[in-house]
Length: 293
Image (cartoon, rainbow, N blue to C red; front, top):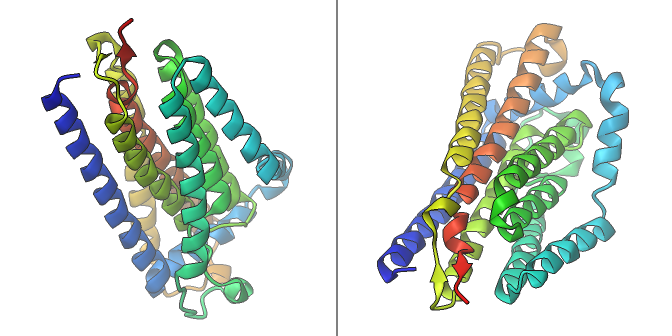
């Protein structure tokens, strides 16, 4: 890769890391440290009661499958894929991405404060739950998998991996384990680590690395990003309508606003993951290029 192109890629990755960090701070401050933010989160979490009996089984299976053993197995599989492709640096970087994102999530969860505004007394004793650990596991594995997949199956893998990670985030809301902001924050943590991993891959690239124009997944990244943006717009419209009812307690709301809060938040969760994955897919061909010889 030309030095100029590599330099601009590095700048882009730094910008992505900084922007996602800022958005994470904004999400945390608004959703956790404002009454309206906690109220919206609580209403969306209360809305998970609608149709819960029908999805309890699949949701529990999805979330219970995310154990420490399964995380280690997935990490080993991702490292193995990179190694059989002869990419030692990629195997190490993908492993560090998964480990770093999950460790950061746990540190943030126990280090960040959550004031009690009396809006969610049932969960007040639990304290801060942002970011979601289960969502981080799913998203980190999904992004790392896209990094190590061969270019011919990378686009398809990105859609499937994003769908899996989005389903995991929505599942934590459906099961009542996490608020919507917890899942969104988890995706942002993974996005920051993905950008940092990209910088490491740029530094460790061989001199004979070659970026072929056909390796870029522009259409797939565009479709994934557009779907994510539309989902985020839907979320924004739903929550803006909901804010007009902010004087009402979550348990006093009727079925309609509860459903709108839940569905809108689910769209926001899925949309965030889609955008994060689209950003990864748009630049991965420069991070893991072809190698001559």
